[in-house]
Image 1 (cartoon, rainbow, N blue to C red):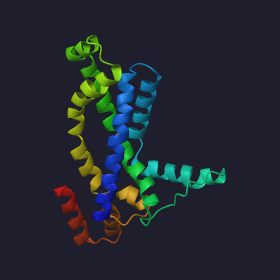
Image 2 (spheres, helix red, strand yellow; image 1 turned 120 degrees about the horizontal axis):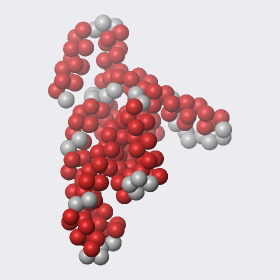
Image 3 (cartoon, one colour; image 1 turned 60 degrees about the horizontal axis):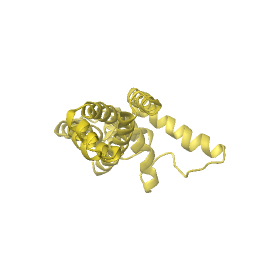
Image 4 (cartoon, rainbow, N blue to C red; image 1 turned 30 degrees about the vertical axis):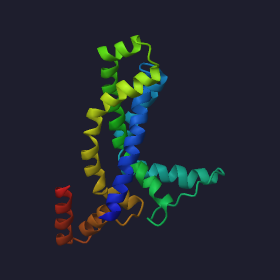
Length: 196
């Protein structure tokens, strides 16, 4: 459980930080190429299953880039060094990141069109100050409410990501207990997931 919770915490932190960045960029540049790029990336990450994302990350960063002379030092799996946490974190946090980016974008677009933002701009405030002090602060309210359910979803571990990257977490034990038909372990893991 501690390993799955740590992986879930890192994946949630990754999803929250990059989701906010992509959402803010998309909202500030509405109907321009950064907006289209952010929305397209979000749709791609949201629609791709996390085990497919894991295999693609392994293929790109562990197999193909070292062949081209760019070795970033990523391993195929395990949980030994801090570098081993990066690829599973990205694979597990990609879909929640896309969700948070879309919510941030739509919430900020609603706030940007409000009267008090128009008033702040009319007072002569710099655009950066308007975006970060007035718009983002109020747009984060619906976004922050998603962080709890996202952590509950990724914090219990992922069956597929933990198997793809050979991480000894709850998801991997659940799959192992399913394959060996260990009903007691299946019930225990299901109970822990239900509590989350």
